[in-house]
Image 1: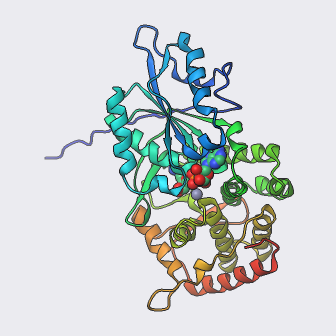
Image 2: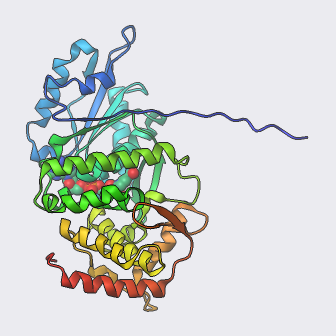
Image 3: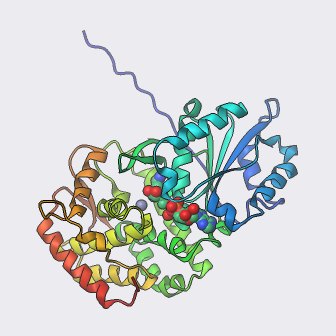
Length: 393
Ligand SMILES: NC(=O)c1ccc[n+]([C@@H]2O[C@H](COP(=O)([O-])OP(=O)(O)OC[C@H]3O[C@@H](n4cnc5c(N)ncnc54)[C@H](O)[C@@H]3O)[C@@H](O)[C@H]2O)c1
Ligand SMILES: [Zn+2]
């Protein structure tokens, strides 16, 4: 006897709003996102803040309290004082954060109609976002990314995760946010490395999706290197659009297939992050991974050598260093440890190894074979190109 398949679909929709100074008393952006129903209970919110953001802006706690006080007429309340979370990759180390957030939500009596507002870099967004998606099977999550990478990539996506057993993003969920607010004021206080790191994701997405944006990045590079906030804002917006377009139109937002188009350059980047014990930030590792895969794409005829060198020149002129000593780490058999990244990359998604590669600048095609000998040659080229560049170690 055959039984029918029962099918249903769930649509997702979330706003991504660009603003400046979301916690200025006269900024109504967040109020519009949290408005309580007039006949229901007042909407309650808890705010998690990356400790580095709090240090950089000591008045933020007070600003948040004052903002909620100025919006009581909108039937919104702050359930507790903002909670600080240590930022950086340490935030994603293991599952402790899940228990911590769950404890707070239970103590405060928060429910699935409550809001978890997360202000932080990609790591804090990933870690607190995972916790918020698990407590009561998911509270409403409003993300305010505070780094370049968070605003143009990590904060907009539908994924969250923490690291476990030395494996990047081993434990996570697909959970679309309730809303994302890109507040440019947060970008001002980043150190130079963090300010720059996220631009690697813009270079990445331009190479596989938008040749015009790649050319624009080449023009903007000197301004980006000089930390021009207007240039960064333009890059963040276009990069965010390209990521959102992909998530909403690719037909595989929850990555059921083997393809990971937005992870161009990431097989080695994730491995370099781990091998460097997170000395390299994610974006810094992505810049290196993108440079290596651009050379590899040229080796297999997917980019011309000139296009590959345009990629290296662009990354270098923004200020990225494209070689890392971790490339020289070898296992007991003499094989570079970086190559374990290929296996981990495949295992993360299952199925066959599928690597996103450019197909000319601005287009992408997946490849499912990887030639380590060809990659060795690319590593030699990358080391040489980095030695010749002026970016200090
Ligand atoms: N979920 C996704 O789709 C996705 C996508 C890309 C990257 N990621 C993840 O994002 C993480 C990287 O994020 P990131 O590049 O934002 O780095 P990060 O979160 O590690 O932050 C870098 C440093 O900047 C500090 N910081 C954050 N905001 C600041 C501010 N406004 N002023 C001063 N200091 C500030 C942090 O405390 C940290 O020390 C990685 O773990 C990566 O795997 C997730
Ligand atoms: Zn990335």
